[in-house]
Length: 621
Image 1 (tube, rainbow, N blue to C red):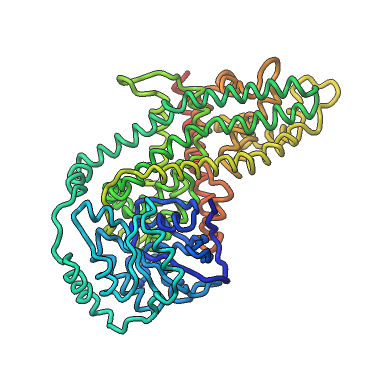
Image 2: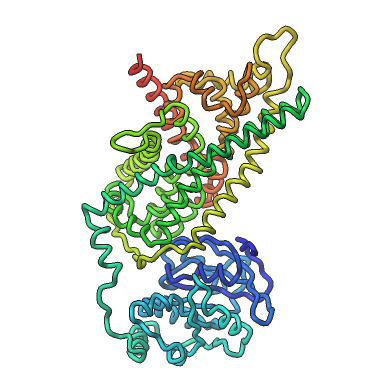
């Protein structure tokens, strides 16, 4: 398997994939290049040029660009502008494509042909991949590819990208440049509709089709009353599963980490090396790795929703709610992407045409609870919320997790509403126009690729930035050693100890001790490191038989409930990691918006934690 790279290379034959959203273009890209790019069944998933390598039947290597989906060559959003610039040869550092593969959805040829005619008018050599012919056949749509090729004047290949059908024929076609058609059409754009109608009539496809099975399902799922209720229930059950299903695999990882710590402690002599391995590496990294099952379960369900075609329906259902705070339902997909990580969510805002909506979506994307916060939530919920069923079978811990995610969503909507009230453009009504793809069963290969990617990203973070900062924290927590005659744990006399006590002056009003205050510093690099940092700090400060694996019962016995609630409130609103701030700077072209984001998130987090700590303290007296 060759990884596709997201960079531009000026040399070599260049092939560009172009098509409408939801036409299966990215699935075709994955099959052709052997890459592992994410495939999702909604518009706007491809927001950057993605490059891969294609080996043709004759062994020739071509560079392949997977361009963002677009309905026309009149760009309305930043991602559509990428496609237009590449086809026109205006993309910085990239030459004009030598060949364009125009991917057409066989189930909706009428709409897809409009983009093809626009591409053909550019005069770039072009071939057609008629995709999703299997879905078209199930609907009784039979397309004569030979006749379509004659009508379009370019080679046409039938494909089913998800199963790899037709790809060998396409590779063979790419080996024969003589069959590529390069002459642009001279027909005026205003005559496109007449030409499309002529093509459809010649193929016997000019009659309108009746209702599809998806339309019948939508009568229930898009009902103005039933639809939102079903969406809320679906999301609620998703968070229930995160705790219920992850309990066993998390136990296995915890047991393995504990065994590894015992073995390492028995083999290594007492001293700094043993402390580094047991208290630094195993305590820090193992304390984060244990939450991998919960992250994979969460993304398993999100991938199922993407693959089935339900996500655009969720955007449609939420359009009225989001319109009440000055946004459209189109912001839903970037915001949903932010549950994985705010960075791809912020990048996905390029599919939003309205500049004001795009900026507001960027500002509130960090309030969506990203997967990096899940380890913190799981640690605190596991320590302070009893594992029992309520209301006839619901997991109490899963219910609390659902409330935390809901709190982030409510906060994001509140911020958007405030921006609506104080900006004139925010009061304008922008109707949502979004394609609703047909429902289909999720493809196991795409779901598996998505889960492997998420696991790879998480493990790389554990083995990279988390490991590095964990070792750095261990050094700061170990040196200098305690003075002669010291009675407390050595960490209290270290650089980290002094730093933690200094920060505690700021965070003491919201209930944070010096250990928590210290863990927030490396947490700015990645949220998960807060758990790793707590594991390292408490291991080094432990006495008796306390170990890193006992972090959950340790904080349960040493923290008060108001402190735990305050820390949960902090992480609902906490300022973003440095990578997210860098992404915002790149997308907005300056430091003004990142600075605004950091400022308002810090104020929100501090105020929420202050109120949570003092109100819960008063209630628990």
